[in-house]
Amino acid sequence: MPLSKLHHAAFDRHLIGVDPDYRLHVAERLLSQKDGPMLEALKKLHGGRIRLPRRSEDLPDRDRLARRFELFKAA
Image (cartoon, rainbow, N blue to C red; front, side, top):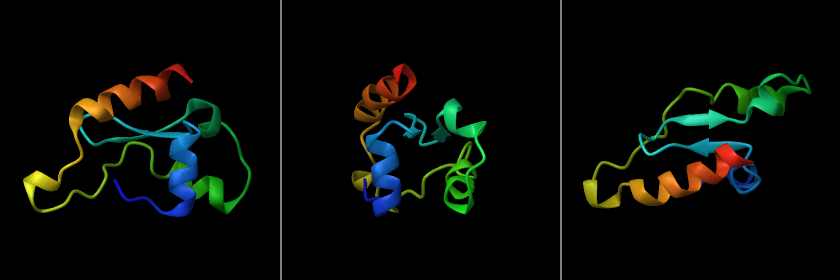
C-alpha cells in the first residue's frame, strides 16, 4: 500500500490504521490532542476510506490489513 512519508511514519507507529474494509482510523490518543496543522490533517482522516486501485488484483490484502489493524488497536 503506497503511503506518503508522513502517513507511512504514522502507520508504522500505529497512529493511523486501516481496517479490512479499507476504512481509516486515527489513534484515540491523537484525536483528543491539539498540536497544529499536521496533526489536524491526520485527524481528518478518521472515518474516511483509502483510495482503492481500479483493478481488483491490486487491492490491498484484507487478511494482512486485519492482522495489522489488530496491532493498531492493541497499541
